[in-house]
Length: 292
Length: 240
Image (spheres, each protein chain N blue to C red):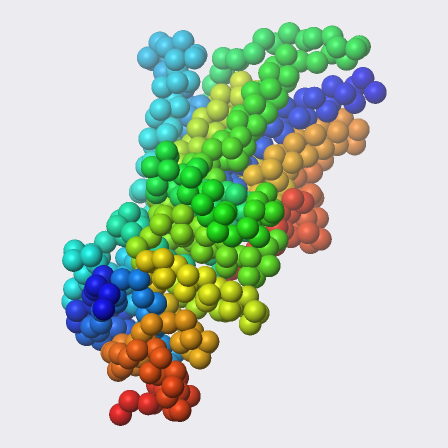
């Protein structure tokens, strides 16, 4: 039972990171119909930018994160929207998907050329100690990750549901034509979604890189699992991304511990296939009609 | 006679290679309901979209309150005093009635929003009891009322409304038309596109018949209502 609790907590910590990245998928899909297959690399790049600010630039981790956040907002938020999504979306979703796949390869190879293919350690933001709670030994790092990621998800939901700007973003996602008719600045709301996505990616990098370590291809697994998590939870629901992420993280841990670590990476894929077959809109998603 | 509020002068507009409005000229007077009728493809909805700034005129002039407004963005037209209730469902289905209304006032200064919100609810008491319901759970009539209430929060000088009767029962439809009449009597100019011509003529002051993007007839609504050939008018064949 105690082992089970430990597995749940550490699985939730991993799942919370998947959920943060998956939220990026759902936000961009809802705001602009963008499927971003470069999402994993959008977590990898801030990790290396932070390493640059910590190493050659000599900044302490909090300042390095703040500087990385700024660069991410400009490059992965504003730049991605203006230079990749806006020009490609006019030609449809498929050309945009291909463009994001190309961007993913370019980012990976660009980082490999700049930093080499070796693995870099990354400073931990939480203590590596274990806390003993009710007999269970829980990692401070896991608990910290759950608190930070959970706090961000709550903050994002609060922003989307409790502020006029957040509701205007939802309005644009639900009915763009009606939003235009009411004078809502549609392009600005879409930009906010891209900026939030960039901020989530930078924060995910801060949380996962101490564990995954920084490597040019570290985004492959994370991006794929976040995509599965978003589909499992429901691509058109932010809370679906949260559920999908945590479900994948926890089940991976349980399968790894009780069946075999070899099956661990297959969990997300099996869940993904089951959802696609039996509830294609996702566990919390809503069926969506689109004109063709 | 009421003062002229709106004027189209030789307006040409369309989509891509397709020209819909073909040198269209007409005027609309303050405090009147002007009804646009004509066969499908005549350009009725395009008139509203072009006036509201959803479509830029290729040539010609649009004057509102004496100012040239052709090509202005929808947000500018809202601020100038023009509100638009397009055809079909225009709500945010997963948001509540309250939040749908609130977003309708987003272009207003923050200090005015609460009073306009209260004003809109006072005008539509049935929405009051559903204020925290999701918009998607409202009946067709309530949804149309919400769309109109949302637009009226801006206290527009001109209300553009496209096919308000679609999806409504005859009783609700009459209520919506009666509301438009009340608004016009209180000074709001209404420009309405409506396929249910006979019912719409009953509340309108003037009727403009369009065909092929041109004005074929400009008549007092009462005159046309008395015309035994109304059915032929509806089919766009009355004017030779």
